[in-house]
Image (cartoon, rainbow, N blue to C red; front, side, top):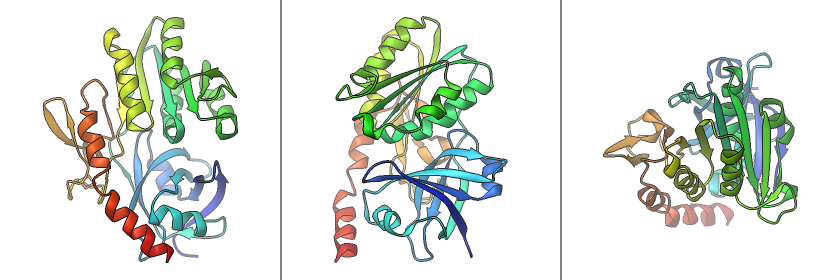
Amino acid sequence: MTGFPIVARHDISDATFILEVHHPLMARAARAGQFVIVMSHPEGERIPLTIADFDRELGTVTLVVQAVGKTTREMQQTCHVGTSLHGVAGPLGQPSPLGTARTVVCVGGGLGVAPVYPQARAHKERGATVIGVLGFRSAELVFWEDKFREVCDELILCTDDGSAGIHGLVTDGLELAMERYPDVGEVVAIGPPVMMQACAEATRPTGVHTVVSLNPIMVDGTGMCGGCRVRVGDGVRFACVDGPDFDGHKVDFADLRSRLTRYRGEEAQALAHWEH
Ligand code: FES
């Protein structure tokens, strides 16, 4: 078999699935916060996927895919155990700067739960107290609770409908964590832009350093195309080479959201073309 074999697949919901891919070199090189560019077949589009986990002993990397566009819907149908990914390039991006905070809150919302895991584990490994705050729509969509319990000193689950953990948003969980642990020195928030912005606003009055992970429109993932430009503070940065992690208090989220919607028409066209 050519390419990189898929050794496990776990479907989290109708639209989201996790792939474990055998790629020993990548597993050895990967650090928390980095991403890969994947081509599922030789003619496939190149798509960026965050490395949600890596196991150096087993030689595997874990990728989470949300089937929303043409390529990811196609992958949902074709990527199974026993098949392989044609190309996996990386690891790309800067590893997360872990800092020295003694207490860290790691917030993950929806699909952001997976990529915040390696950050929580890395903070735990360097000796920090780690509080996990995970948000899901409902209890059926909860995943990786056990993995997080292994690396978190406390885990606060939040659901939109109250079917698991506290009834509320991750910002409610974050506020609870900040009340319980007044010495929090860093917050890491990964999820939809609106969620990351809300977390950054929640911590802004306290000045607690808040890191967000931006995964805007990436094309080549190497700083050549300029597709992933984001405004951070007074400057323009490329999420693929300067990030994906940035200071959440400095990111221009309005600019980010307008970029994310820019190719919606083309994406809908590609999907319609593929379906017919
Ligand atoms: Fe092309 Fe970042 S993805 S410059």
